[in-house]
Amino acid sequence: MTYDADLDARGLLCPLPVLKARKRLQALQSGQILRMVADDPAAIIDVPHFCAEAGHQLLNTQDIDGAQAYLIQKA
Image 1 (cartoon, one colour):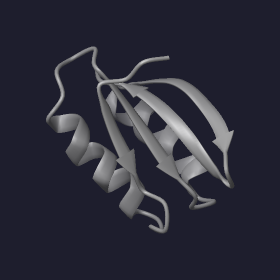
Image 2 (image 1 turned 180 degrees about the horizontal axis):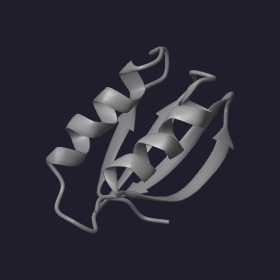
Image 3 (image 1 turned 60 degrees about the vertical axis):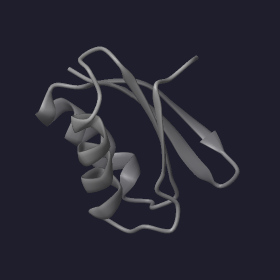
Image 4 (image 1 turned 180 degrees about the vertical axis):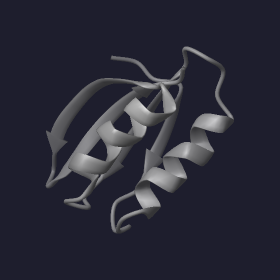
């Protein structure tokens, strides 16, 4: 799947991956997609919760190289 912006949040611990995703999403237009890669175990819970609370859509989650890639579509 294609995406409009990329965020490498590997090495960051809660809540930094979500805070950085929020900031990056602010720069995107509605409907654009952010790909975020994070290796924080808490991100598995935090990212879906953040999307639900902010109204964004979590399109896909995929395990890659010991981390997770999240595709988030801006509301």
